[in-house]
Image (cartoon, rainbow, N blue to C red; front, side, top):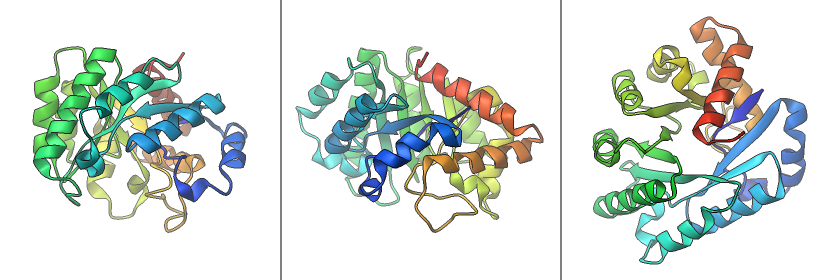
Length: 255
């Protein structure tokens, strides 16, 4: 069993073949996909997809790129979706200092608000962090009261920081870049983070792994992420697939 713990199937790049693609996943070995939102519109689309297909689950949240678009009502709108059976997380949320599409103080404010929401509704979080490792960790550490669970998605930081997140109670998700020839740091993370704290993902349609790099990413390509991790750890492919699927179902409370 393979689970893609993070894919944006609501993206317009899937408009022409979304239904066919989703219906083909089980036959291609991908049992489940978690589809997070990035703003209110994509969160609504994610919920709709999850309720249409039994192999799709949704998360709702506002990405740091769109933090400046949030207002006083946004949290309430997100909260209104959290009692839906197929909504399993708040995300993706966090900080992005690479693009700085929203002012950093606004990013931090909206990140904290959404972490508070997750704790109120007892859902895990899906964290985006790019060029913001220090602030991301500090905010999560401050928010952690023993009830907060979540995953650092598409992890690109150091092994040392990954282990600090693990100590804090979080999972680390590995994506397509682990297949890239010169991705030394993420390969080290994929090798040394405890396997009971690892998830795998595609972040479709982005970050396509080898050998399809440069083309549209799809959930089925999560097998190349799993295969690379298996090679790095010198363990069977089936062990990586099974364990990361178990971890994903445990984190998102999917029976």
